[in-house]
Image 1 (cartoon, one colour):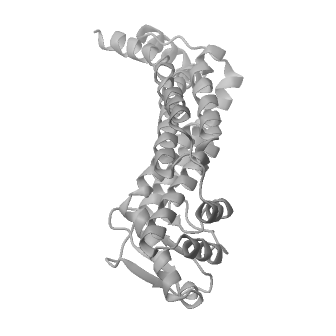
Image 2 (cartoon, helix red, strand yellow):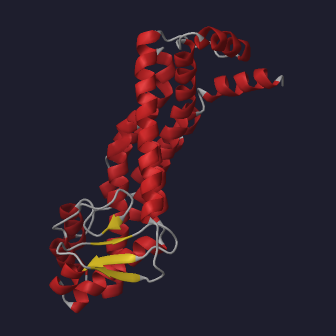
Image 3 (tube, helix red, strand yellow):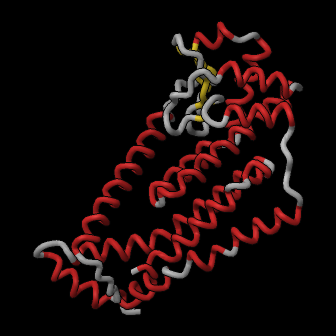
Amino acid sequence: MLLVFAPVLVVAFVALVVSHFHSRLRPQIASRMLLALLILAAFAAVPVLIELITGALFEVPLAGTWFHDAAHASGFHTNIGRIIAFFVWCGVLSAVIKLTRVIRSYYRSSSSSGSELVVVHDERPFAFVTPGPSGEIAVSSALVEMLSQPEFEVVVAHERAHRLGRHDRQLLIGNICTALVPVLRPVLRRLEFSLERIADDCAAKISGSRDLVARTLARVALHDDLLVLTMGISKVGVAARVIALTDGAIHMNRRNLALMWMSVFSLLPVTLLQWHHVVASLRLACGV
């Protein structure tokens, strides 16, 4: 049974270790690497889930015996027992609920009024951009009153960078992957941090002042109670982002960067390890 989990455990462990050094990478590189790790982990988890769900179906009263014979004829031979089957169904239910919330939040937040900038009457200072190619930038009336004109332009530039970079898609994929492999939640948070750093750098280039962006970020970061898939200027890692803006980030040298990418790509054969069981069973079932 442990061999079934081995590939996804190895991928998850390497992903957590490699992603720990994300702050030493340029944010554009870090976001790509973190997203690749999440996708690889989810890809490794799918065949494991198929085997576990198949084994759990064997334990269903009445229908379990029939399904057991049909599945064995197709090449599935996973027997996990009733206790493990119970926890498998609990995990499947939890993953389905999480995926439903993520997708519902994405489409609920992606509604647009057709305007690029919308001022929301609210006493809390906040700003975010809704998902989608035509996502709108929403800022609260309290934020408009609190910031000076240069600071307000920094906020708009930050959120526009999220929209133009379609960071919402990366965040959606990351949330789907962590629904399948919840242990990778820290990697998702690091991906969010890298996307925010990208937007910070874009705002700094437009405004011409990294100190202005850092000061604006510190002022806005009073509230971050935003929807799951909204990209807000004060969403995550405010203190570390301010330090990166003011002190400058220490980037990794090319040798270590190459080693990190090699670690990521070396996971590909591991993710394929369990898929041959699924492919062989499908070929047997289809008579190929």
